[in-house]
Image 1 (cartoon, rainbow, N blue to C red):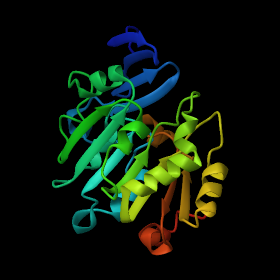
Image 2: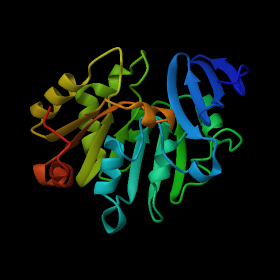
Image 3: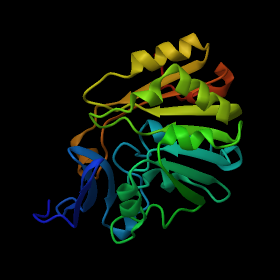
Image 4: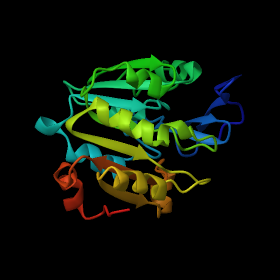
Amino acid sequence: MDSAPQFVAANSFGVKLVVVDAERGLRILLNDAARHGIQSTDPARRDEPLAYYHRSGPLGDVFAAWHGADAKAQVAIIGLGVGAMAAYAEPGQHFTFYEIDPMVADIAGDPKYFTFLTRCRGTYEIVLGDGLDGLARAPDGHYGMILLDAFTSDRIPTHLLSRQALDAYLSKLDDGGVLVFHISNVHQELEPALGGLAAERALACLVRADLNIDEADRSVGKLPSHYLVMARRPEGLRRLAENGRWRSP
């Protein structure tokens, strides 16, 4: 990587660094030791979602399952990172990012660092503050998809994984809505707890762990990832079940 960060600052949520891996052509946001997002510095690849959000990974499956005429019009995302999920937005979709760290929002929105937000093909907004509090202010049944992307560091916001939180998410989903949890974490195994919550609420639940990443993929910015999805009924996850790479927890 370049010896000098392009950006470095700290607040109560930790130290943020934007660094460039010149050899691989990647710009990376670090929050303390955790990688919170990666974008290619190659203009031809700048719209590719990388890191945990790669199109060949579980999140790519999710957005491939609901796209075009089946795309969810309203999508909520708790956790912004560098805004990589905005690369999946289609015209007519609106993404609402809930982000607790205003410095992360500033970095993701500054095109001299990352351009996923500024090049978003749909529309988006960023709501600052605790994600659960922000989501509570949305109308009931408003979202077709809610994505939880706040669990990759060693400081997991456990209140986002409680029974009360799950009930809150369900109240904001429309009847055919999908809950997507990004549970990649080297410190804790989150699948059993979330699978148990889904079973308690009699929800359909599938997981995919995409952990064996070869060096060719790593060299272009893909990272191992682990996702879990829930819906009210099995038919709500039929497209992923037919994919063949997803299993029950």
